[in-house]
Image (cartoon, rainbow, N blue to C red; front, side):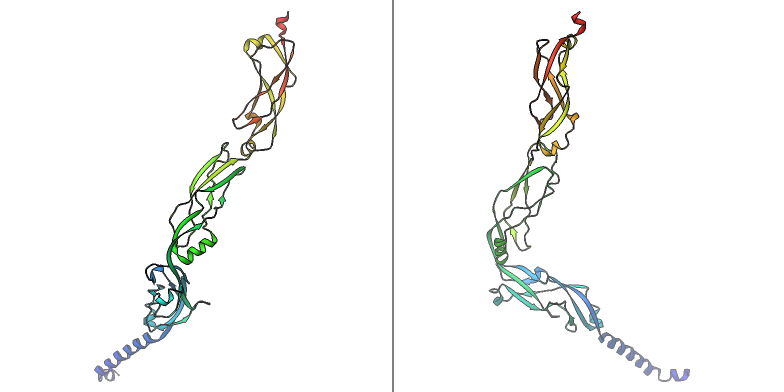
Length: 323
């Protein structure tokens, strides 16, 4: 057996080498599938004449299924970028050009074949237009997170904005108006008693191909809503000199009054009776034993107003002084 293996061993070694080489070659040439290769179409891949600009690419991303020799398929990256899309002079007047999806367009090896595309995709369509500058009308932005019981008003410093971009996109903006991102008012103090004013630079919602050449500023005014009247029951305190308090006894027609108060809704809703003090001022001389109608005064926050109220007050000498 050994003698047979060693006989003509040089020829047998060459045959083995050729067999291995042939196997490696044929296995590398066997066609295998490669599904789901991601394809991106960057704007930079489009070659346009000067003075024109891309407005849209459809689709901008998709996947392809490939097959080819194993050695070639193994060199394909998981995702590829389309290398070049040259716009022809004849397509400039149409404003768009569609490119059939081929391995050459994708910059792939000629030995690869495209076996599948997403449904509805047959080519890459590039839309473009001549770059122009024009004015487009603006739309008032939406206000978000408006505090309760505050009434907002909104004004803009301009009604039109100068923009630059492809003519098709500019025409679309002119018909639909330029929109802005919502204005958030969540940082406004909901307990403000005065009008709050905020001046905010707006962020336009523009396609990537369009540039705003002017800034738009919004002025937001937040005014507290006035509440309906509210009735508060308060005890009546006496404000009088210490000497008078020793000499006289004071009789009030009522020791508690119901006062009608008004103010901003956002503040009045949290108003507590202990935040207010009702009193009668007896610091001036009053004739004893005579009933006097005196106004009830109130200590309260500056934002609160109160309807007038009175009580009858009678001063009499203290018993110790009448003997």
